[in-house]
Image (cartoon, rainbow, N blue to C red):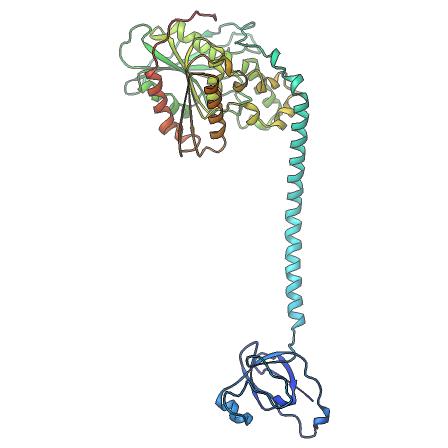
Length: 452
């Protein structure tokens, strides 16, 4: 016959055969000691059935043994003809709390459904963006040979429609810090011109070491504002002085200039203003016209500047333009570029270029004519390249550009630091190293003035 009972503490149900009647067992769920009940007096062994499987631990304590009429520690033995349990365990029916486990499974399934509803649309959107980017890249690659044929890329600065702007009177010299004089020079826009010519706007900032200086005695560093998106210009702001003053402290003149087509954060949300800024930037030949005007001002209006020691320098996007100016201006004696974008297709997204191409004439020139890596053969002056190893976006690209210049037998110095990121490394390590490098360069022999 089968004896059924339950644990008085946790209500777990068990069933077992007659031979376990009167013994004490330990509940497998809560550990409670439970005595298997005796069968009713009116039950007979003829009613014996087959016990269904389950698990408990038999209680081998002396008290349990005395109550069950067996010796202490004899829990491992079974009556004759009974099934022998392994390691003090017997097989019996294990009850399963169906409602509780079902609720748990349903809860887990619900959580998975909710998470899937949130994550799957994001996954699909990401996949679509990847597919679109690949399609744009394939489309541009198919058109690249037609849009930017290498043989039609003009070499040198195109000054066909260029005119030198009028410069206003410099402001009174002020001691911007002890030993450094500062002046601002406005670039005058001709009255009545609704659309100024390229380079006929903005201002220049001139820093000179204090004291008296003989004519043509000061080397000059020409630098523009950093931080542009490489498709538009940049104005000069107070924050840029940290990249100007170290050269002046080292005894050099500094002439900082703006780039046509400043794109403010507010203007980025307006399509018309974005198109206007990019168009102005391209009309100024990606800043080459602005740099040329600054060089002309330095030579014609600052007699203490040595025209044979004109250096160009810059960080990030300003470093990109510094390389471009060095490739196009033979009067540049040296170039220092800190973490520059050397290959513009790697920094200007293809999808942005595709969207701008139909509405901005000549925008594709940023991938060709105004891309420094396309014209590094034109570099004839010494080049100083600096980067930080932990600058993930720029380090490997700057290093590869420098190695390519070395392979072409260019005069290039490559300097790096293990850490410091994109900006701090330039301020802390890059500029001091470049200044010492510039000071070590010999004054070059005079070269013909090939530009007006």
